[in-house]
Image 1: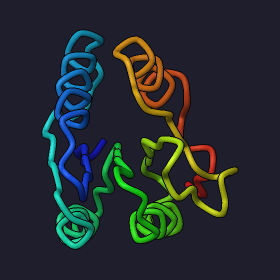
Image 2: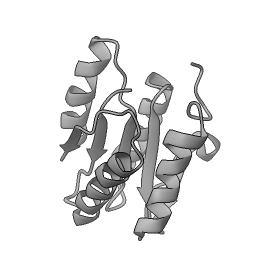
Image 3: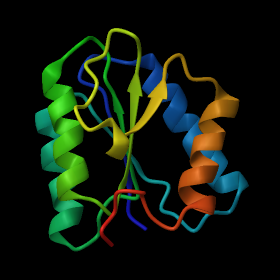
Image 4: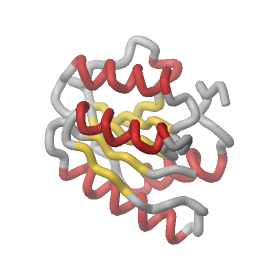
Length: 138
């Protein structure tokens, strides 16, 4: 499986905490996954960073997007990722102010604030219970 990307256009302490929880969970559960975590502070940085493993035929295992402040660009970015990288899990952290995707049936949305137990349930679903993202064509 590929790398893990965290995307937060507006600085997010939450994403740092979730990244730490993710690596700890992977190690504790002995999931055969590269624990390299990439953090991207902008959509442009995320697109450039994600394109590198894709060019080598290794899609990311997980992409976590923190919607942060209401922003239609981050919503479009999540939609673009789901259509371009269907074999990757894309989890979007949203709150009541976030711009939601138009196609929520194919989006994996997690409401903020996120606590450790809930996040570990998400990881268990993604890496242990499901074979591929529900919208995947792989």
